Image (cartoon, rainbow, N blue to C red; front, side, top):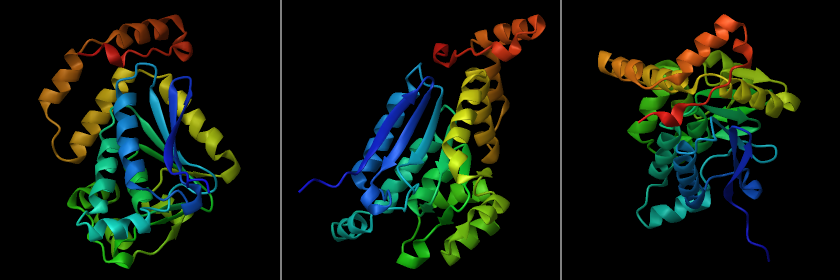
Length: 262
């Protein structure tokens, strides 16, 4: 008998790393091993100068159906809160210094929704379904996850998702800000990769500064010190960008200099 496949696969397409949640027999449900693997891969990619953008998606017809309930139950017996481990992976994704895109089709449930909401961009295929399901299981979500949901979606939408546990479709998810855009299912991968390649062609220093400052502002923690740090940082992108603009070749400028920062 073959072992059940449950892993995070990584594919690289030029400057874009595609992380694939791969547990097809369980609708890409997350195991503890997969969460550890995701955190480890993100740590490696953060320091990889060849990678500018990360795309997170699921294998086959689903994004992620949440935590594997079998493991959730067995962990409870041992006194382990698997929801904390999901939140650890969620926070690793949210703290990743480079732009991230969730490419979503099918189920985006529970822990899958947590990972998607930790990404900077969330592109969903038509027909995708979203739900945050602790109320169906009697689980108390970690404060870290609730805090991020409120910052990302606002209190009203967070209450609707967490308190009801009901599934919503892609159109309503877009209205509520759960996803940033909805595209036809057959164009999801191409659309996400086009977006990733467009982002990868821009100044990585500007992107990293913007991401850190926007996240700080959302938490009410943006101050002059952070602005000064990025303003005074080594920034070869600026001279290249100005020269490209003045010479009319800005569209062909694709400088990648983030890893020169100290």
